[in-house]
Image 1 (spheres, helix red, strand yellow):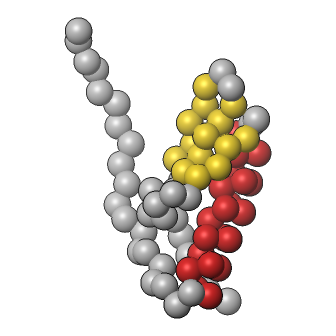
Image 2 (cartoon, one colour):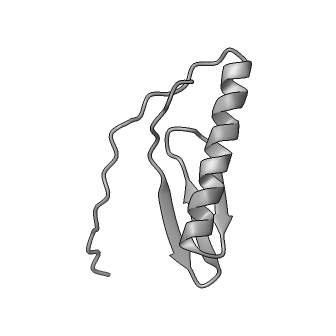
Length: 74
């Protein structure tokens, strides 16, 4: 069994939490809580990777990720 490491972004708003994996295009999930969103994206990523491996596709390498803030004056 091989382990893979991916970036995960989790954003929250009034309706819950949205999670996505930048390295795996189209790989996203959601949850009512942060922990639920994290568990759901973990399952989603695992299924995505298993599907790619079954199909003989390459697994993308983790890309560099940065989180920053910008101040915009309007």
